[in-house]
Length: 128
Image 1: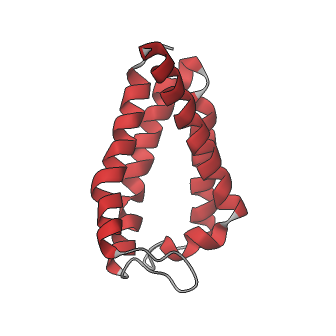
Image 2: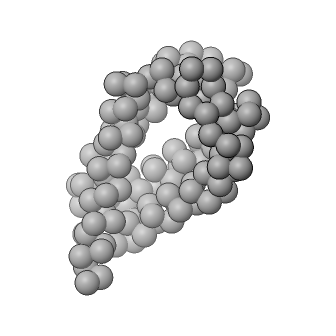
């Protein structure tokens, strides 16, 4: 049973980041308002994050690169934390875009992000 769960955690992580990365290209208008105003070139940053997420999603599936990919995912999650804080600062709502209760934005930052980090750590420690 543990091998089954580990296999799905591993596959799920790769698939999640493949879809997340692709979404930056298919739905950039979702991400652009979430990029803090103080960062330059939001369109380029969005594309770069999409490329990085796609690359990490692919690397998760390559056994000799899984650990590197999971470390990259953790680093990316930490680098993107300011965008989550920015979203909270602007009231967790963007015009004609994502609007969620502020408490939920805090849950996403304080609970969900660490769960993604734990998921990545778990997959990175698995024998592939």
